[in-house]
Image: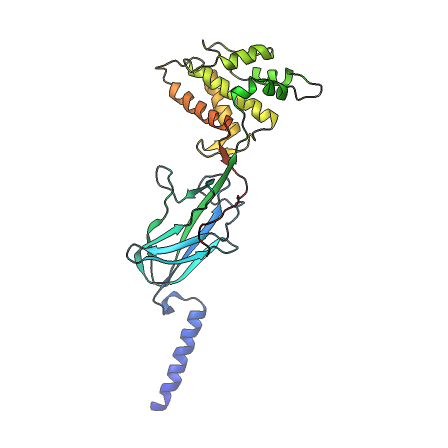
Length: 299
C-alpha cells in the first residue's frame, strides 16, 4: 500500500494541471483578482463604446483604495486596456483617469445622473479569481467655426453670401425663405434682399423669443451653407447634431411664432436660442477623431 502513494499523488497532480490549463473554476488556486480598464474615444459623446469608435492608448489610469490611497498607475496599451493583476480582494477600490492638460477633453463615461463625470470611480469590488471590468469614455472638442448674426449683418457677411458664381444673393435668400423665420410680432419673415435681411438681424430682440431664435437660426443656416460649420457636428450640451438642433428650432418657430413673457414655450425656445448662440460664437463641437493630449506627469 505504501508503494502506491507516489502514484496516486502523481495522478492527482496531473488532473489538477489539466483542470487549470482548461480554466476550470473549481480548480483555481489563487488569492487575488484582476481589474481590467478599457479606454475608448466617444466620437458621439453618448457614453457608449460604439463599434466604430477607437480605443485610447497611453492614458494613465491609477488604481487606489479608500484605505490605502494610490496603489499603482498604468498606461493603457495599444488596445486601450490597462490591466491590474494580483489585486487583493476588497470592496473599496478606486480608479482615477488622468486629466489632460488640454482643456478640450471631457469624460463621457462613467457619469452620474446629472451627466457629471465620476472620477475617480469608487466602491470597486474585487473578488478572488475574477476579473472586474471597467470602462472609461472620453471625447474632445474643437471650435464650431460659427459666425455671429453680427457677422452676417456686416460687409464681410454680405460678401460671403455673394460667394457663388456668378455672384448672387438669391440662393441664400431662398434658403432663408424656406425657414419659419418671424419678426417681433410673430409674423413670418421672408427676406427678399440684403438690406431688409440686415435690418431684421440688427433689430432682433427677445421681447418675442421666437424673433431672437429666428435670428440665430438664420445665422447658423448661413454658417452651414458657407461651410463654416458642419451640420453633422455634434454639440454635446444639446446632445445631437447641428442639423438636428436647427430642425427643432425651425419646427418650434413654425408652431409657436410669438412667445412673449409668460408663454409656455418661451423657455424651450430660449434654450434652443442659447445653443445656437453658443455655436454661432464658436463653441466647441465634438471632434470626430481624438485630439492631442498631454499629462502633467510622465509615467
